[in-house]
Length: 282
Image 1 (spheres, rainbow, N blue to C red):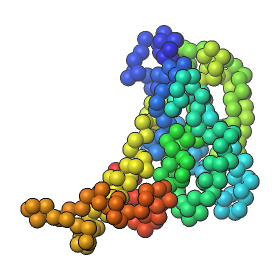
Image 2: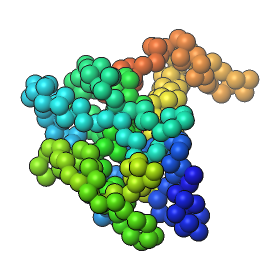
Image 3: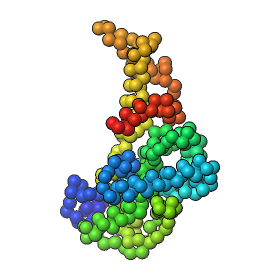
């Protein structure tokens, strides 16, 4: 049942600032750190600052060789079920970083060329360049990192709409950007049938189709390579009946580009930073 119906809000999704989730099923939307970083309002800027703070501190620990400390930070990015967003089918259960695969995923991050290079700058770029991390995990990581902001947002929205909260509920790990550590507290919390619920601003969620490795590869990397082959008159260039030169993306994939991987995509980006800049700007 949607929250608007459960609490008799008499408002449509258009009229609500938060995602009108169904607490029985995950909504296939994802918290998007790129969208969050673009928003100029005070709440979004504070939430985005939490993400940057964690990310910066995490990379500092990695560069200093403090792998155990880095993993301890990372281990708190568990599967958040409170937002009811993501890929799960049936009851919301999260599809992010659980205890079972946390170490495996951490090792993937630590072993990636992107992390070793020191050039990766934003959490959303994990999805582009690090194997094993997709939109669901980036969304779950972001949700954990902005939990404190989401708690405050949920409290404010519940007050606005007259929804009762339950006092003194354990909030889970909250990232303290000023102290650079995880903290734990008890907060006034929205409970639905005993389950903790966090409301999410609809302006920071998306289907996560735009800022995706496949889009970057197909619409920017391959198009750049097409232009370069035509410009240089390479042997792979063909000509249409009117003499116009062209090279298909299929031909590039078969004859020039190595088998697509996130590692390859990062190597390309290192050598062609302006192509990546164009992708981000678009």
